[in-house]
Structure formats: C-alpha cells, structure tokens
Image 1 (cartoon, rainbow, N blue to C red):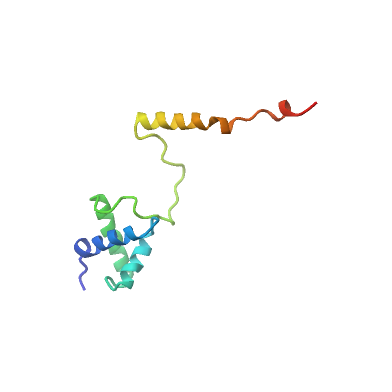
Image 2: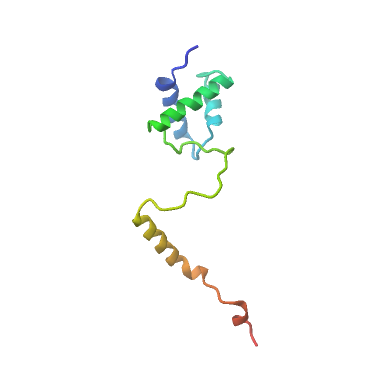
Amino acid sequence: MRIDWKGIIVPKVNELLASFSYRPTLRQIFYRLVAALLIPNTEVTYKGLSRATVVAREEAIIDPLAFTDRVRTSQGGDYGFGSPEDFIESALDDLRDSPSQYTRPMWTTTQQ
C-alpha cells in the first residue's frame, strides 16, 4: 500500500489539527489516522508521517508550531524580541505591573 502523504494525509492532518483546542502530539494525530484506517499502525508509517509533517511545516502547509513535543526539553529559552516595538511593549507591560511588585523591607513596616 503506497501512502499519498502530500495529497491525502497532510490535508487530513490539517483537518485533524483544526479539531483540537490545544496543540496535539504527532502521536495523537498518528493514532487518529490509524483509527480512520488511512494508514497502518507501524513504526515505518509513523516515521513516514513524521517526515511528511516536517516537510509540510517547512513548506508552511502545516503551522510550524502545530504539534507539542512532550519528550524533548530545552535548556534556557528563546530570549529577545521580534522587533523594537515588541521590546517597548514588554517594558511598558512591566512598568504597568510594577505596583503589584512593590514591597517595602520588613523592618520598615514593623510597629515599634
């Protein structure tokens, strides 16, 4: 059985992604496709789906952030801002939130 990844499966993946209210894992999508009898439940097919969705995300057919990855973790984070405007908006948000962050040293508030 030859699987038409680009013509049938990737559009179905997009359809399934739209049905979730959160970012599913690739494995969740895989089992939905298996349950719909669109692909066989094999490791080779799972790897094929993974490759097909990588290509589809690179080509912007599928949202690059469509899937969550609960296995891999990252150290640190993606620091920085997309634009000077994003930086300014973040700084203004911090400034607006500053009253809730204000505290006085404990010894200045104790009664004598």
